Image (cartoon, rainbow, N blue to C red):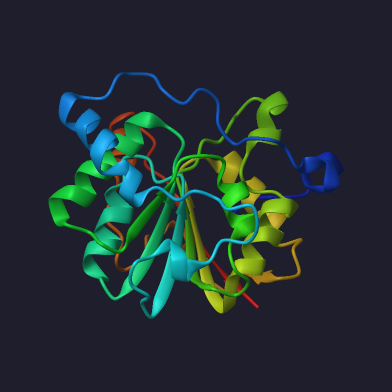
Length: 242
């Protein structure tokens, strides 16, 4: 059972023309704090992923190879990414975030917890995903992405056939793609695109179960802010790469 109707989506929302150049607007709203600036100068060069001319080798990206690999697209303040990396030090994590404020917070988390299993990509996530090896990731996260509510900005939404196909290519069969949002229109958008895609399935769920967070979930600062502003309903989707 779908929690929201997807019948209103237009072909332009899911056809080939849905690909666009970037998923974000401006990169910076505030200056980094002095400590964050120091980490940007000293730590970021060590953890930042640079794309080669050809495919990106995970063996070269990470100093130590681990059993599993995960990617988070738009990690915001980095709370979820840092917690996952700290609790699962036997796995490697890549975080994609172009905004300087989020990068600064994530660098502080990496430094505080001495995380050796995290790399950061600071540009458009799709560029990175297209360069990653096929069937090399055990899971992907897209948590509270910018919904770009105005119709003329829908082309900036991360979810579309191009990105879904790119993600499907790098995910192992059976890998989970988790998406969380508190915007019903965006939930509609996500389901409409994923349910049309032949490389992902949405396992059968009990009615309303998509409002229940994952067992290992802890609210992010964005989610806590949304609750204070009166947005109390969230959608937690788990799609599986077939």
